[in-house]
Structures are given as structure tokens and as C-alpha cells.
Image 1 (cartoon, rainbow, N blue to C red):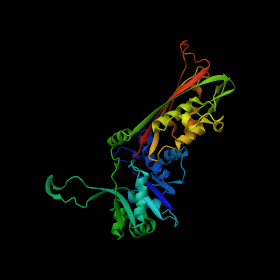
Image 2 (cartoon, rainbow, N blue to C red):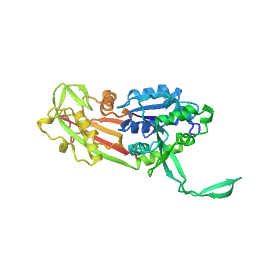
Image 3 (cartoon, rainbow, N blue to C red):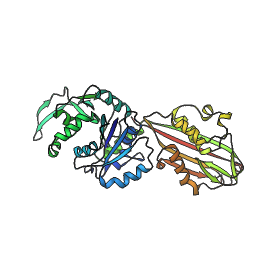
Image 4 (cartoon, rainbow, N blue to C red):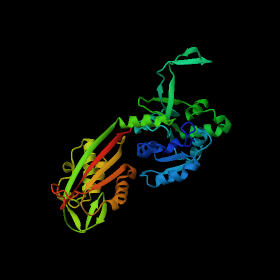
Length: 380
């Protein structure tokens, strides 16, 4: 069994507040790391280390989070070392390896975790790192003393992975005051004579320290965006309800369609397929008996599974054209339905509605439609 420990226990003095809950592209910063650990086949459970003050906020976030493995909250300590040890003390003897990551580094991916896991099979631990490329100077009173030879110098990053038994031994054998001199777990392991391997990280893995870093990382995420547009229309017939985003609205109409006629969900599905460059909804779900009266949400969930692990939905923006019933009273319920069924935050779903405003050249008295724009972000 392998355990992930996400360290988000700091107070963020240089940042000006708790950076772990700062919003980055509509999501709290810590959730980027949580998403990667949650989707990793290597990690079996996750310990999220946060300050006691943030427990109510984090618990509220996690109540709607689509996790597929246990997430255990753990209280942070005075130092990073204390925070990590608070989590390690809770791990049972079944734990083989522990993967420790700073929540302030949101650009990691599953390949990093897999590479560290392989390295741990050959040594006591492994860390993500990259070689120093800049020239290093040793100074004295703002004057250069000498140039440091950068050969064999590497900058340590996280995640860092270790076999639990030797790491736990290091913590137990070290006085709490002595532990404070070690700025990461690798240096603690090195001090005690254990072997720690370097895994060369060739991707950006910026650590957010100051408020300006948020804008920098946000720009990197948006540089690798994909956008898709979807449009769908159906006729309206006499009935007793419409399905909109998987939510049932009781009314005097029904949608005339092979499936449940949910134009909003059809439009989102086509937009997602466009962003993924996978054709259109008709190619994937033709009008065959297999899909007769099927839930459109079920079809969309099939396409959601085609999204690569390192790609996330960043935004869904829809515009519904419908004269009646009015959509406005149902917007929040539709958002909640989509959020729950697609496993995404409702804050990245925008729903707008309009009518034809009596325009005779655009007769929608017997029909309705929807346009959707889906934005995907590459998280590498």
C-alpha cells in the first residue's frame, strides 16, 4: 500500500495569507495536487495536512469533491518537518511507501509519481529534481568571493517518495529540535545514511511562494488550453417535462428526440468532443436501438472518460434558447446536477438563457436549442 501526503500546513507569511486555498483558475491551489494523487494508480490513500484554522473550509470543499480513494485530514505543525511527521505517525504497518508533496507546487503529474515509485524499488527513497543551470556566486558584503562549481548541483523539488520503514526510523531517532534543520525529508534520510535517488524532472514545477506566482502559473495553465463548441436543437411536443442538464423541469412540453432530448447536455457533449478532436456526437451515439430513450448525461459521462489524465475541464459555458418554461429559476439546480454527475466543481459551469424575444424571423415556438463552449486545460 502506498500513501500520498500533501503538505499544506503553512501560514503563507510571504504570500500574505493561506496560499493553499488561493484560487487558481477557479480551483483552490491545493486541489491541483489532490487531483493528481486522487487519479494516480500508484497511490492508495491520501493524507492532506492543513492548519487547524482551515479545517472548516477544507471539509466543505471535500464534501463535494469527487474522490475515488480515502482522503484523511491531518493537522499541520509548527514546521514542515512537524507537519509531515504528524501524517507519518498515523500510517499503519501496511504502508510500503509514502509520497510527500508540497501543495504549493500545482504542476505535477502522474508520470512524476510513477517515476518516483520505480526509483524507490532500487533505493530507500527518491526525489524529483533538476540540475542547476545558472552560474552560482558566493558573496561577502555584496561582493563576489568566488564562483561555485555547479557541476553535480541539483535543485530539490517535490514529490519526494520514501520507503516508510527507514523514514519512520529517521523521525523516531531524531530529536524534535534537531529535525528543524532539515528542510525536506531527503536531507533527513541522507543524514541518517540512507540512499536517496534523483529523478530528473524536465517539466516546469514552480513552487508558489508569493502572490505574483499565482498569475505566472495561471498563464502557464492557460497556454495549454483546448476549446470546443457544440450546438443542438430539438422540436418541442406536448408532454409533461423537459430534461435540462440531467435535471427534470416539469412543464407542458417534452423534447422530440431519439434519446431524452436534453439539448444542453448534447451541446456540452459535442463541445467536449470538439475540444478533444474526437468527431461529433452522432458518430459516437447514432440513432440505433441501443441509444433509444437513453439519458444524455450517461452519454456525456462516456465521453468524459476519454479525457486524458493530465487534462481537466476548466470551464463549461452554455446558452439556452427557450421561450418557456423559464430557465432562470432552475439554473442553480441544473448546475448542481451537472456538477454531481460529471464530478466537476459547479463554479466552472456557466448557464445563460434567452428567448427569441418575439422575433418572427426566428420562430422557436415549437423548438429549443443550446450552444456550449467547453475549455480544457493541460495540467502538465
